[in-house]
Image (cartoon, rainbow, N blue to C red):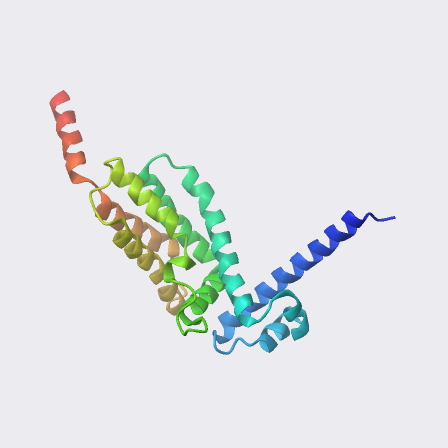
Length: 218
């Protein structure tokens, strides 16, 4: 005889799998036809289920699309973590952040296109965007890296929010460019960004002092 806990666990597993299926279908639909045309009927067709099944798991289309954003952002953040944890310096972490975001972009194109569509177009009852742009990216990690490097004297003095937004726009621009030029080498693109922002953050005063000390020793 199956225990109640076992039965409940199986139901929970099935429900979770169904929600993942619906979210995947929503991503595919938004990517294919855009935010405005991604109706629940089309999403249900993509998932090969009825609209009532979607309604059982999500209150409405808004709730479903908001969950798409939350899931992709969570997945994105988990993807970044091991790359960041492998680095011991702020400069290394900044380079790892840029490279891993481009790598995630390469391997999860549809998810990011869908999120971009939802973030730009999704509005609440008051007509205001539900998501601020920074909600759709692991920007807290980037701000922490920039503040850490500045505090340690490894980076020059700058406004971390301004630089974080500039780096983010540089990375997000790759998604738009890649959509228009599918043959773009995202690894090479990422290396250009790594070089650009290494130069933009470097503390030349610290480097000059270190060079002078080295010259005196020799």
